[in-house]
Length: 239
Image (cartoon, rainbow, N blue to C red):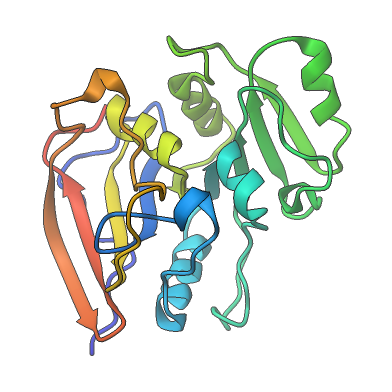
């Protein structure tokens, strides 16, 4: 079976003010990315984990939200057991609007470097700055009181980050889709049903009810008994 492409050609050019944004996730048949109550649920098989780590190796940075940090405590590094070629670990980026990153979080291990985007009182932000190898950036608030994505992406671009891989969670992905800041999407679809009470790929707010956040075109897909990998590009030009 041919190796799925890591970086399919884009329908639309990437806006010059921000990095290229790739969303990557593993989902169940009913669109869930974790178990009931947010419990960690491994949906990818070993082959797909290899694909994920190859993708990490060709991106400048990986981004997750604070919900993912609290639920899974990810290290966000390239694991050589899945990607033997190794390579430079991408910068780690966390959106943490309310300063909840634990001082012992694995993303604060010091190497590779980590950026935490936050909002609010300087004294609370200062607590996060005690973590080794972590830079905390104060951002403007968006209309919902969270980190303003446009400001964060603009800052990443100014730091030389040309490509960003967004791995979750549901609210972060919804914010990227809603803002039109997604250039391509790669999903591993596992042949399982998780059921109600589990986080969906995208957390839909009341303001989104009845209106699709975005439309996509399927550009490539590969399948095997343990699941399928699909690559999608947005129908509308990203912002």
